[in-house]
Length: 443
Ligand SMILES: [Zn+2]
Ligand SMILES: [Zn+2]
Image 1 (cartoon, rainbow, N blue to C red):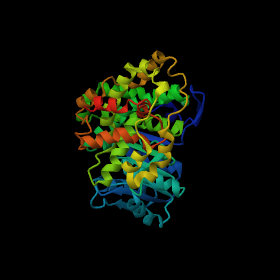
Image 2 (cartoon, rainbow, N blue to C red):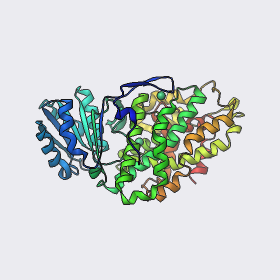
Image 3 (cartoon, helix red, strand yellow):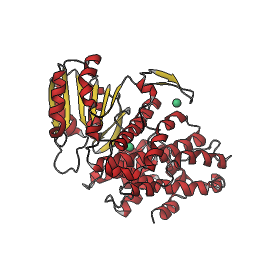
Image 4 (cartoon, rainbow, N blue to C red):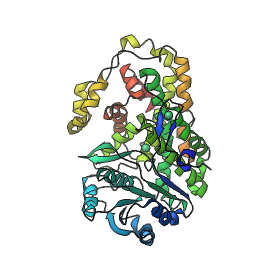
């Protein structure tokens, strides 16, 4: 069974990392175990966050755990203002959009001292974003191990229908009560597991950038998630049983992934081309009023294709040095304007930078055998993502999640323009082989 890292347990504030940087560790209390929710009054009295809390939850979660949490807060001498978010009609899930933010905004007029998020992904993101904006601390009582955002420094929000990730402070207290987490709907546990699979290609992309573009790389941040990836992929078949051991290890692995982002200061250790594809599909599904599915499930299914692309690329990497001089991108500006339509204004800046390849590529092509080994160390920690997802009973293709073939293909062709971050998809396009690779991988 995995445990939270000693730097967190021992309350270390900063440390000199093997990557050469000094990482700041957030001031944070992590409660992990059966029944740890009942330790909350004790922790609150130690931290003294204030006398008035705004509790934010949603229609599904509040009826299950709301009363219990309110009682515990009141027992700690904290007055509670309650905000139960309603899912707007026409949406498949609660979304972190203008409507949800304004629902919370109304309750802020009561001037709470701190915010309590009771829920998973979207509730946590909303509270993190708003707490940061109004400069108040927040704590989260996690209700599902569905993604790695509890401990991360980013809060993805929908702005005008486009997903923008804002910088925000992680919570002061994270409650991971296994009695609550192991009761989570199976689909949410699957989503957390599936999201974790994406750390393989995310880190492969980071290594690629390190050798290609001399980008800074932190090996420790990968060490944080490696053990979880190995253990959970090995034990994937146990997911369906939701044993406390499995759910605990998954929760810790996701926590560690969030922590790695906080240490490094952005989402690099946890998000690569698989996340870009997942974001693309979400944005376009919302625009077309289709079911976007869950973040983690999209990420896992995208990782299956991403891993395939990577394995072939690494097999052929020695060929790429001969492409350097005759590189010719396939995707051009006019095509992008047409494809993104009204959303183009959100991607314009990133697109402009990515349309022309860099003039030089670091050490990458000088020693492809070495680089291949370095990429594989990350990529193949889970040797067969597709088989692992299947063993866990999780959809392993984007089609199974309801995305049509042309939408999936578009996602792999255009998703890279959503963010500045360079991934394998950029490299393949710059060298004029993206279409050929996609024909092969999506066949
Ligand atoms: Zn994710
Ligand atoms: Zn480091």
